Image (cartoon, rainbow over all chains, first blue to last red; front, side, top):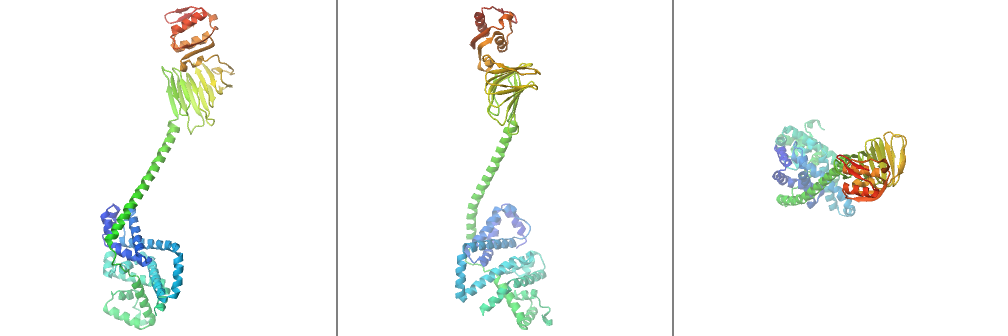
Length: 188
Length: 316
């Protein structure tokens, strides 16, 4: 999310493998964590990040040099993860059915599943936030950046960061409020 | 919302939860939350969402190893990509060239212009037919996919072996006469005034603006300019093919016809002085003999004399 993002994208576009490697090393862990948060599969999460980077490298001529790298990467990983879940659903309808049965027996597992489901829902909702709102929220939550750091990186005022964060939380809460009620009931 | 807390909004709550709020702001938020269970609930919801949206970085995973795995995959991916890339271009080039070849064959390659000059030449036409041109003859051919007919324009004399193609008639235009063929072998001769068509095999249709006639093997027709009726006759012998068979095949051939051919073949000027001699029929075959040898044979056969003059040879 640094000011030299367009520069890096330009380098990758012109076929600079070193720049590509640098970007991968820098963002791999958080992207992997993001994919893992959605799909809950460690190895497959890596494959999802790989897919995104393979596509970036093989279609590097089509990269757009304006804009920032990290929001683009987060979005790509999110879409790839949803695709993965879609395929997974078809592949293992049986497993889901089996899990449902077990779920009713053990309260513990139930809570765990609910927590996973909540997290997945939150991430889906995040991805649907307005672009500016989403970028700021992800920098704050995924990369643990302070308001001042975000303001500097995106070249905006700290007040805007505050506003966008408040807006994001308001929207997210509305989206997952049903889940939150359930979680609280289960936790008690 | 309570009147006292109108200045508490979502922005401030988030700020507080993220530790970005000032001390006085934090105090205000805490008081606000304590004042009402709904306030507390909202704050707790926000806390939960912020907590759950945080990413848990896997500390065991190694970025450099992941990069190695990515590069290994890029290697294999590159091979398949360059393979499909090459395959795509091979297909494009192939289509380009075959289209080009098709258009070339049917537009440019299907036109031929030949002039035989001082030699007898055998010309294969683009449709597979063969034309043998006598000396001083000229032929042009236009055919191919984009034409409904195979058009030949002829000046002089030629023998044709036409390859069969019922969908595209082979039409020879010579003077004002048209000869239409499907697949056959025949001779066409024009000396400027008279066109002679002799058929060796198959069927040929000959027409001028006024009339038409169908010739079968062994028949011939002679057409002069603007002639009203075309009448066919039997062809005597195969003398007409001397220029491509290199033989003079006489089979009851009148002497005047043989003399005419000899004059053409040897560029001589043989004159028959006595009109009674013209109708004398001769049956023989000459191969590679010189003019003198041939004339000697003729003289002995008919008991006549040959006089060699300065420009002319006289038969008496």
